[in-house]
Image 1 (cartoon, one colour):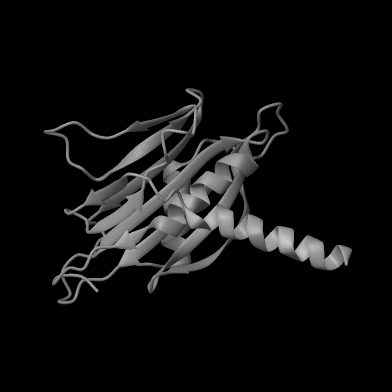
Image 2: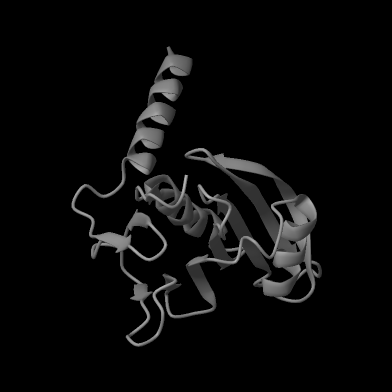
Length: 185
């Protein structure tokens, strides 16, 4: 009976975690052809930062509790300049990450038919507020061989808040949807 109850609790929690906020505001990007559900106003401590015109609308970021924790959503037409390989993914991680980070886990990642990679990085030295980064990079190919789109998602957190921040990050990833385009798969 207790195993059945535990299974029920796990299923309900998973359904709640991935159900999203039904009243959430949707972020739509018609330049890079994707949508995401923005966190609801009921989630305190989150500040959504979107670029102001004339800055290009590559994506947005979410500052968490006004500290060094954030989620960055970025898209760009640079897929012809880099192949979608483990080497280019690791190069991207090194270019964008905080210094003294080491890879805790990484592997292929597939979302909505787009291939990419996912990694979790931690600070090499033991610190009170050791940084933890979670990163996902997906490739959307063009239909005619022209430049594709990189969708890049990065969570910057600390060891104390990583589980909560990662749950928010995964909710965003679950709500990510491509917008149909005659140019991209």
